[in-house]
Image (tube, rainbow over all chains, first blue to last red; front, top):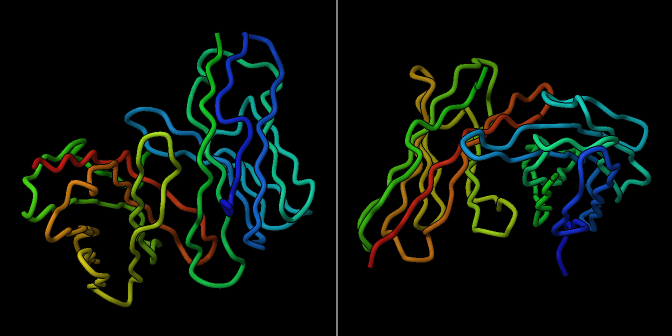
Length: 113
Length: 112
């Protein structure tokens, strides 16, 4: 079984709709992250959480919100989706101790029409 | 302002030859560097890393070199195999916050 899972894997939605992307992990890691990938731009950090009570904005947080429901669960919401939020979204985790190597989920492909 | 740059979007190499991927960074606080490999429809997977206290790290066919004075690192794959065809991302972090900054990626194609 995968250590980091994301649901849904693919989603098509319309402009203005609210959607939630979910991430679960069985690695026991404290830290969780949400990234988006766009062609030619690599992965950019949206939000990150170092524990259940800690939520931090990344470099591109506008238009997004997150919820850390438990150590193992971290959700990303688009309150009112817009077409330029069409992208690949990845969740990642890392251990509080150690080097900070991050481990990624399989991604969610989102299309906003 | 992108702090990690991979200036070659693509690389084509013959099977059995060496693949060399390059990465430059601008933030002098970065002290940990990683390479990730990504296949289509999958998430990035950790490949190899290096701490700033070293200048070389090897793991099988993969070697990462770090030149701190030039703020440059490279990934060598020897010999290249068809299964190495993927997108490779360079990433860097500072030990004070552990957030990763990623390059734009290099698509490697290994020709038979």
